[in-house]
Image (tube, rainbow, N blue to C red; front, side, top):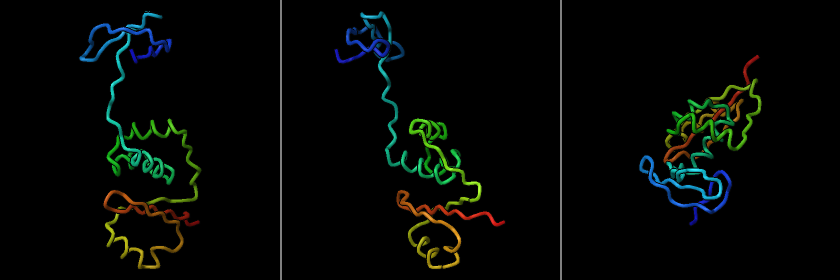
Length: 138
């Protein structure tokens, strides 16, 4: 059988009934009962990457949740899983805006929109997200 015991990592496993509509197994090696892992909803790596980028740019879990439609708890677990540490942004103020292509072009035409700040533009489905950060005025 291809199942492996999660406790002792041995393959000496047999079926042992069904619990909550999931197959239950018994490890004959250590007598541990377990059920198969549920497949769950796999989220595309694109969203994981975008969430990590947005986090590094200073957005909160809840802001990222509103933008991507992915739970802030899931985002938090990705940050922990990939051991992402955000550099201190104490002197910077981050804002973001989502544009259609034509709106982005209009925004970029005005030089005042680009002066005195850092700017990242990333594809966001059929739109573009602009992340902008400026130094706090002293």
